[in-house]
Length: 255
Length: 318
Image 1 (cartoon, each protein chain N blue to C red):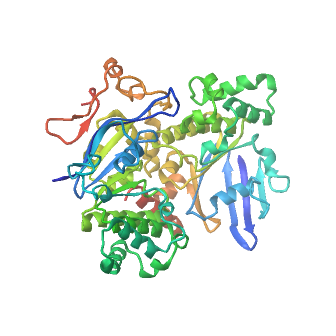
Image 2: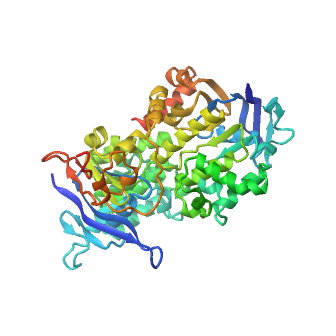
Image 3: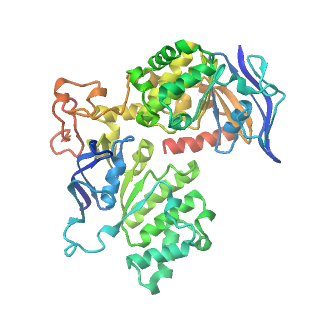
């Protein structure tokens, strides 16, 4: 079953066309990695579909649907915090510094429609499910009191509060230490398996993509130039841009 | 081989509040031999940047000594040559931030020579030409200001400025993080050239194990302010002995789907929380090999066999 389907997505800033005819599908339960050099349009495309770009951006597509509901015409934001959860590069930036963790998580649950009486218990359960020890203490903590790894888990808990079908993760490990990043990837792959969660992962780390992605789509100048199963794309890339990208990334990670 | 830089028994404690004390470094010792590159490896909170700042004289320490060519840099000023400290120059993560935005590159280089007294005025144009050549920078960039340079060019000018002072030791703090992949490759080539052609001694601070593997002769692994493992790079990263070094290496995902998935599945359950450092070995709460003794005494680094340079602070695995 196709969860997210996009055909011929265009994003323009004035006369500048940043995303140019991008098409992709995310099936239920699958993890799709969007890869591409800086400036290839990965983040812009995703933010465009989710309705999170500033008003100067013009977003259009032949079709863009989430669970067969149109995304662009009716505004994708109604799915945020419900059918679609998002996590971003810097987990601390997703947390308001002046609110305790519990209050922020409960706000996400409120948006998701969880009744007030059960929010605290649900928040505790969410953190427990994500392997956070002593959740009561974490809920009472301020963001600055938590390590980067814990902040990322709280950010995931907030993204999962609305019991989403799709998790959008934009460079989720870049700001994390290597051991914390590895734990995060393990968590992500378990969530995909156990909850049947689909993940749209934006990453330029080939190791990260290899560890968790079922399929890879490679972007160049705002369009997908190649996509397929991770083993095939990484093992035998056919498009010259894919080869160029992987050559740059491999030299970077294993010169 | 002569020791260019020596750190012995350095401890640093931060006091964020009146009753708080955070041990950032505890009894850290290391030596960097002339012309070699030593990498400090560790995660956030390991103390690697604090140690770099101690070496640069930017951090107050409560104990320990920093020696350059055997001279204690903080000894009685009347007996310490004035230029000892200046021979070590830093290159920070964001190279643009250390270049004054109002100044042209030429003037920044001249100022560095002027302040350090490293090059007499008549020799300066020749010296600048030589530095540009060594760092792969075109002459016409000298008339630019920092906002007109690419990330890689900024870093090269920051390096040129450091070398213009006459420094022969560099402290590189996460030197690749601000660069895109092509500029990263070029920077790595440049560091190798500086080492080979100019015999520059380097302390490299990085959490990027692939960079360390390529660029460093020797490695010191820090965990929560202590040295847990040290030795030649091939030994420490090739046959790691300390469980923390092993965890670090096991956490890097290789660019191969089957191998990456295997590694992810084999990872131990691990909750690296920033709670106070326990007594005994700081890694004990996360350690798969932990025994009761680990929670009592803090292990010191010991050679893995008699006479070996490779040392690890783990009585269970050494």
